[in-house]
Length: 71
Image (cartoon, rainbow, N blue to C red; front, side, top):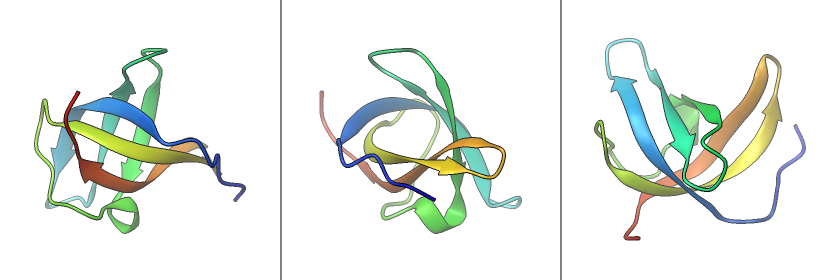
């Protein structure tokens, strides 16, 4: 996994605690990014604005270092 060093911002589309994953939409590109439980720093909910770093996961882009932020 190679990490994008740039800190990005996104909006949580959904996060399912029971399944330990969710998705966010990047605020700049509107791309959908997978959020694995291992990528979380803060507890998140739908519509939260978060900062994150993007990595290349096995099935596409993944968010790591996900934490709640302000616009």
